[in-house]
Length: 205
Image (cartoon, rainbow, N blue to C red; front, side):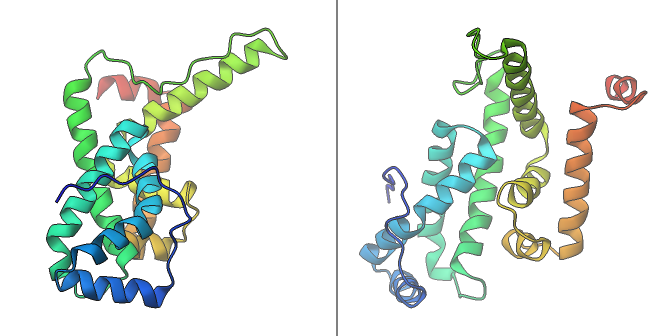
């Protein structure tokens, strides 16, 4: 099944009971019901995918792969978890695969969405350049994180989800979510603002 979601909006929201009915029909093989599910959830799926992979083109590829997997697996979805949780897990896995493919083919290519410093003399051009540089370094630092750590820090620091919700979304324990978040923040801090001696340790690894 080819799934090509339209640019995501939040106008296709459906009520929980409608969503449950669509899931039931989709599990029974109703393709039209599954397409309704795609329209109802594509905004959230795209947003998460974009946060995880960092650019629009890759995010759309992730969304495509997510719904292809979901279509193949919807018959086995028993409803033990919420549909959003199920889709989040698929999206996170697809994003991890996409990041792996991108790293293998990246080499010296520049990302299309790499922030370009504003060189206009308005206000404070030095501050603008420094802010752009920090954004670029943060983007690169996030990309360098292992996907399982990146998913946790995006869900916590971007989506502001509590640890319990993150654990549910990723299918891990709350304590594991806290540990991963701590490790992710520490790695970002070490890369962006290393303390004395940490730069030498990083080069030695």
